[in-house]
Image 1: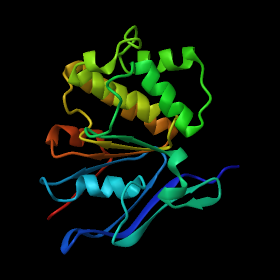
Image 2 (image 1 turned 135 degrees about the vertical axis):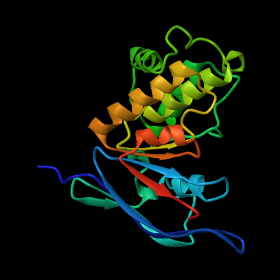
Image 3 (image 1 turned 90 degrees about the vertical axis):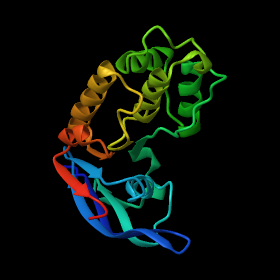
Length: 208
């Protein structure tokens, strides 16, 4: 029987030069749980998510993922982590399908053309996989970021400003992603939009 999934953040601090933006952040989450991290701009929301996803080093503290009896640091667990953020880089000169195929190859993920088409359908881009990203609207590009993040079925999904550039149908997409992620693992959401607090089981307010 596999061990339960846990994400443990212990006394994490983040510094930029002499400026400390986070200090003493600690929490633990289990499979099926969602945490919403809120706070004013500059309070460290995005920095915390980047530390959790192994994209940034903490000045102090630790992040660990426990799964199947093993303990991973984020740098060892990229195959377990998914990341969506407004600044996530995609290749505008490539089609949506070419972007997904490239990232799948980089991650060593086996896939079929049908797999990628199904993923595009899931995020509301069905029939648009052959279009280059330069022709995409900002909302469509954000949808493709979700497809990228879900490509490898992550057990820990981090969403930074999850509904930015989205219309009402895009918000419904995010609700569905968060709901399905409860069956797979853990979700962490960074936002300063109070409407997005409804996604969370727990709220962490930074800068208070």
